[in-house]
Length: 92
Image (cartoon, rainbow, N blue to C red; front, side, top):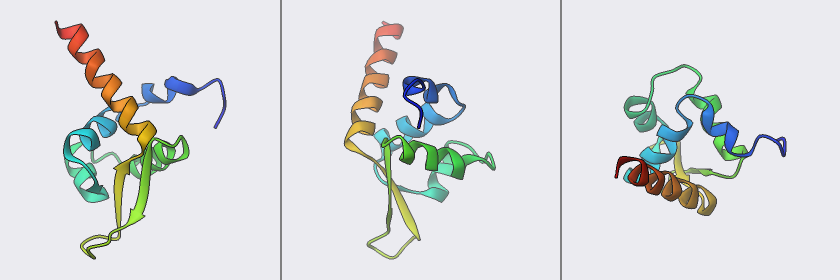
């Protein structure tokens, strides 16, 4: 992670959509994200990049229904909330 990137990582396609999906739906399987955000073959890389920046957490599924579950970290939750607030400001 480069210090100069910061919010610029959100410019990459599907990054904001992924954060907002998790904000609205809570912890989700990768497959749910692929089906509802994008079927782009680079989605696994994008999710890993969000994890690298500390915006999401990837953890084993405790209920055994999926291999892993993706959830927002505290930083990701704050970021997604700011995006929702920004959307409200722009649309008001």
